[in-house]
Length: 208
Image (cartoon, rainbow, N blue to C red; front, side, top):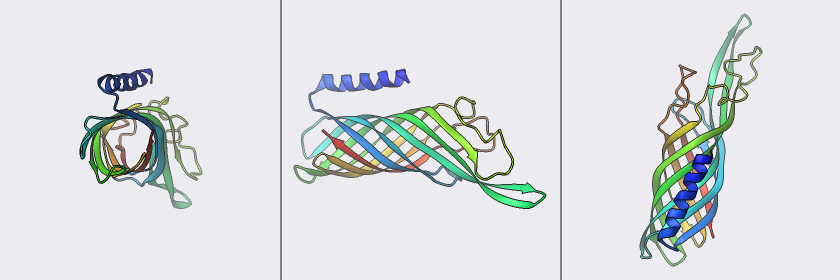
């Protein structure tokens, strides 16, 4: 985790050394995670952001770096077969990570205080904690009922991928709708699954 904090600090220092046009802000959003073939789960992200604008014209290019605490996950449907008949159950996996996105941004100004934007770029994430549980199952399944999926080795802590977002700017506020896609299979332990993160988001940011 210290490596990612250091990387964020170096990015912000490098951006600031080239210009004084660097702003800081706070950001948070609602996430809907839905890996291909799985049911969705609602989560969130919250964190800090630094943004550097390269130009001061009607069409601006910018770059931003953020450090986010994210909550993601997924659900799957399982059928439990017993002497008393078959029953369906939800398998829920949820996890929390530190995420570091680096985004290139294009801004089109509608007026002095309003504009629209599109941004895209890579991200890297480090898993902090998470759990896996099959709901309402009458018998214990230790392979799937796990208090910490990272410490048990079921999930890899490192994740990476890309994300994009479009939105509007009103004064100090930025409201965006985004999508992110992981390029990394999070588990080698559960051979039958491949729940790469596929996440939709609504993001609200305030820049000071």
